[in-house]
Every structure is written in structure tokens, then in C-alpha cells.
Length: 452
Ligand code: AMP
Image (cartoon, rainbow, N blue to C red; front, side):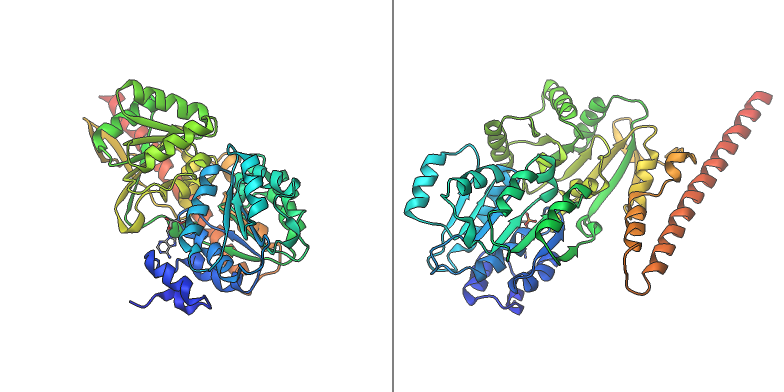
């Protein structure tokens, strides 16, 4: 089969390197980003881990870099060492396609003095690293910012979340005004906007529908906790499912610790990854996970982005994530490359509205329950969605659409928003009706019992 990357204006040596690495068909984000980035366009790409975004920005960069100029031309930052390492490894796969190209990796926890000495002897064309170390090297003038043409901020929301945005801002301020900037992020939080506006005048915004990341081959189960202990429930599920590799997600470091400790106490070989784990230990764990030495991994959302693990057969959501986008991220970890996968979401009484929000995003759940050590279909989802002030508010998706509506739009957009709002209202009414019907049935039943 002809390599489909040939459709872009890429150097033949790069196409060859892609073929050698079995990259023959661009992913949707690559289709959108590559042609524009090749022409120097600034881009905001909203897309998930696993979408192929790394190659989407690396290919145009490596294609356009000029190794004959002995100067720094591109800087790429990622908010964790693991992520920076992954980008570096991906870049190394393509390095041979450009004679004389030098790529440097600059992350915290490594010998800065040695790096500076090496840079003195041999400049790099592309610098990849974590914000802190990159800024240090720029401040010391071991790296020179004034020759940079392209700046990539990967995982911008996580960068913001980890408190690195100021550092990234300082890095950007050392670059020339005429700069191609590419920012990739799963979500675009409000707090990111001033930074984006400051450095990007009319960026191309590329948004990939998150739904496309959940593969059809994933079973998406929903299990009500009904007051049962979450740790015990997870343990039971793992015993029944016997996963090849299970990723268990929780919202906070404390929850991850609790689940991890409980499972460990039950005798399972389980790893944990969260921002509070000491970096060296985290690196060791990531390596062991990648080498498939664990059958179970408990992680927080942001820390989990650092792991590119293959063969995840099960994803368990111990809690519903705080951000709906994270749900897609979590579930997208399984069912990759056409493999089957199972995602199991546990929810507590009172979280029905959150489930409804996810459903309004197009996510379909199959209700399940545990009965006699088996996972069975559950018909009684018992979702009590009451019309409270809280759920009268619009779901996040709707809110986003309406906010967009205030700006200029293509014809037909208004109709689309109106339809979506109507659909959501219809959905809410339907749930209410069903609940009323059930409540009535229960009332009649208890009346019948009273009579008897
Ligand atoms: P990323 O979203 O950049 O972290 O990439 C996720 C995974 O997809 C990585 O393991 C890449 O090697 C792989 N990948 C990226 N682009 C392609 C492609 N066009 N075809 C096959 N695999 C790809």
C-alpha cells in the first residue's frame, strides 16, 4: 500500500522514515494539522492523547528545520518529564531523515551543568523539554531564544494545572515576535485564554470531536455503587474480569492512594501513578508499567497522560471525573487499534446528573450490576433525576455551544444549537416522565401490599 503521507509536501526521506516505522495513514488530527503547519500557520489543536498529535506537529517541524543553520529553531515543551521523553523518542525516530539534525532533551532532574557544556560544544536545532529546565537554559543563554521560529506547547491544560504557565510565558517572551506557535490541549480552560491571545494573533483552531476517540469496540458499562464501599467493589470487579491490564482512575491523589493501598493489601500487584509520587519513583513505575510488569494501575487523570501503555483491556472509573473531557480520555485508553476493551464507570447516588451530562455528549452506557460474583445486565438503573435548580442549568456541552453562538457563525449554526437545546430538554423530560412512572408503580405496589 502506498504511504498516504505522500499527499503532503513532505521530504521523501521523511516519508521513508514514516514507512519504516509503520506510519502509513495519517490520523484525523494529522490530516488537519500537517498541511497548515507546513506552511507556518499557528495552531490551537484540541485533541486527546492517542490521537497522533505528536507526529502532527513533529513532521512539519522536522521537514522545515534547516540543519545547515547552526542555531536553535524549535522549542517544544511538555508539562512532565515522561511526556517530554515521549516527544523526544518520537522525534528521534525521524531524526535520520535530515542530515546533521540535532535534537536535545532538557528535563528537570538531570545534570544542568553538563547540558550547558554540551550545548556550548554543539548547538541543537530542536529543544524538547519541561518548562523549568528550558527556561533555565534560556536564561543562562545556553539556549538562544532569538533564533526560534516555532514553539510548541503540548498538553497546555496540564501545563496550566501544574502551575507552569508563567514559565511557558517567560519562555515565549524570549522568542521573536514573528513566531509559529502550536498549542495542543485536551481542553481549553478559560485561564489559558490570556496566554493564547498574547502570543497568537489569528491561530487556526482545530477541534477534534472527542467522541471519535472512544472506539466502537469498547463496552461502556455503568454500575451503581448503591452505598457499597468503592474499594471492595473495584476489587470484586477485578477478580471477576481478570483483566490483561486494568487502568483504574480516581479524581484525587488521596483516592488513588486509598484504592492502591486496599488492592495491595488484598494481594494484588498494583502500581500507582499521581503527581504526588516522587519523580524517580514515578519514572520507575512508568517503565515497569510499559514493560507490562503490572496487571493493575491506579492513576489520576493528569498523571495518566504520561503513560503510553498498550494492551489496556479494562478502564475502571472509581469516580466520575470532574471534567467531562477527562471521561473520554480515560475510556480512550482501551479499545485501541481495533482491540476490544471494557470501560466500567462506578457512580454514587446523587451523581445521576453527571451521568446525564455524559450521555448528552453522546456517550452510551450499558447499565450493569454485580450478582453472585457475576456481572449481569441491570434494568433497574433507578436514576432519580429530579428537576432541581442545579440540573435546570444547561450541561457543559450546551453551555459551550451557546457561548459560541454569541460570536459570528456559519449559516445553520443557530438551528443546530436550537435543535441541541431542544434535544436536551426532551431528554430531561423523558427521564422525568420515566421516573414519575416508576414512582407511581412503586406507590401502587405498596398500596397493594398494604391491602393484602
Ligand atoms: P500521540 O497521540 O501523539 O501520543 O500518539 C499516540 C500513538 O499513536 C503513538 O504511539 C504513536 O506512535 C501512534 N501514531 C501516531 N500517528 C500514527 C499513525 N499515523 N499511524 C499509526 N500510529 C500512529
